[in-house]
Image 1: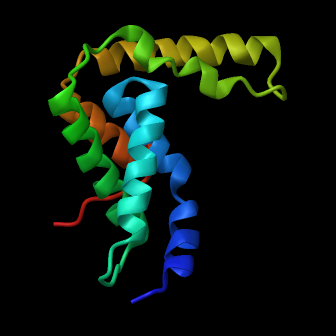
Image 2: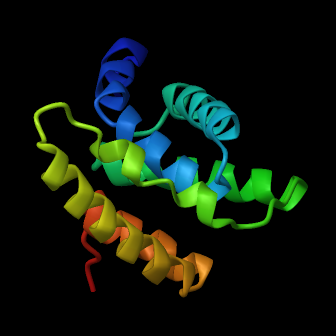
Length: 134
């Protein structure tokens, strides 16, 4: 069993991925932050061994998000997939920003056309690079 300090450091490396997952699932920044905080504390106080911290932590985040959604469901809207804010890199030229925004709009439209489950799978597989093992 890792001590809490070591486990905390291990979890900190995955906070961005945890927030990204929570944000996609609950579609609300403040709620996503609360979910990640609760998941972090839950993971920090876990007493058993952890083989792969990232998928383990993201599973806790996912479970926290679904628990939250059961208590207070919110509708899925196009605004909740505001991906363009993630590419506001000052190193891009105006033309590159426009092309990336067009690409992100196409991704947003595609994600709106699939179920919540498939959006989650896409995020974990393509964005967080978590592969499923069979």
